[in-house]
Image (cartoon, rainbow, N blue to C red; front, side, top):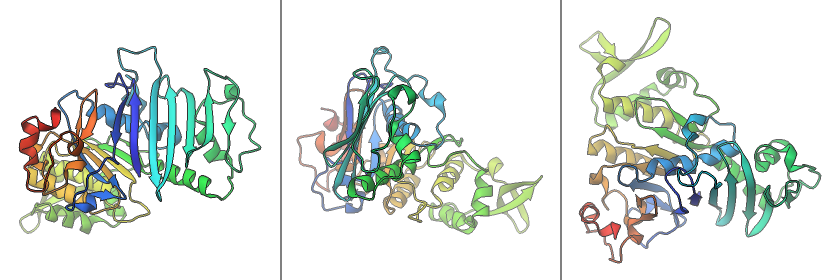
Amino acid sequence: MLKSLTVSNFRAFKEPVTIDFSTTGNYSFNTEAVKDGIVKTAVMYGKNASGKSSLGLAIFDIVGTLTDNYVNPSYYINYHNRFNKDILVSFEYTFSFDNKEIVYAYTKNNFRDIFSEKLTINNKVVVEYDRFKDKKTIELNMEGSENISLDLRQLHFSILRYIKANVILAKNEENGLFYKMYEFVNKMLLFWSLETREFIGYTPASGQSLINKIVKEGHFKDLQKFFNDAGFEDELDHRIINGIEQLMIKYGKDNAIDFGLACSSGMSSLLLVYYWLEDIADPKKCPSFIFIDEFDAFYHFELSYFIIERLKSYGCQVLLTTHNTSIFTNDLLRPDCYYICSKDKIVNAHNATLKEIRFGHNLEKLYRGGTFGK
């Protein structure tokens, strides 16, 4: 799981800012939202332009750095903080697998150009270089990489990416953790809960249409159940029209109307969520980390509850952003799972106040009253 990320000089963040999923409290309720001392299901609040979207892009910078999965470079055009355009952008990710820790840090001048990398596994530095200090040398301490002869002047992308693609590493604990980190990053998924299929990670390309994929992979009945569980009573159908699979809403005995013409913004957004999460119950296909920006922009609060409860029941790590304070409640999650974001600091509600928070406290009222902002 992702334990923490520290990012500096990236977009909204001028100074180093850390989101730490391991600063948890000792709460006896909603324990399924935390796994092995790390927050598994998190919701983030923050004022407009407080850095929530910047944080999502920062978390997913590693996807473009290490994998061939889809990333639209236009998301990263404004890469530097506007006040520090001459200073490198830095990232430090900490992962935890089987209670073992991996720290991966790197600096960039833009989305593509890496200037330094450092990979530490179980407190041992296994990969390190810095083009500013030495333009030629790469330190490699991974068993199986001894015969690599690389000059930094020959390498224009991540050395970790090169190792993963070209080197057969020995089977040992350190290398096993390296592959676990890679698998985690390869299955990370960011998407926007809007009427668009824009996303980052998880798959190399955008692929086929939403409904065609759902029907082709045999998930149509499950889609109907998903909508029913969410509170929508309409009966769905699918038909091929002009050679394209179309989702329909049935009415009357034999009539149907195109889903796109009849659905609400909430139903359209829900279809997009289902499209990305239809395989979430399958451990082999389930994303490792999901970030949904403004996840409930079109939802009634009951539908927001439904989505969080559903995500909480699965094994993936989740971070959602929202402005909906009605879901800031101990009935749904717990104080260490609600994060407050600003350009200077990211902290969960548990650590944002000196007050002892109990299950009976009204978190929404405390948040609106400024308790977690002081």
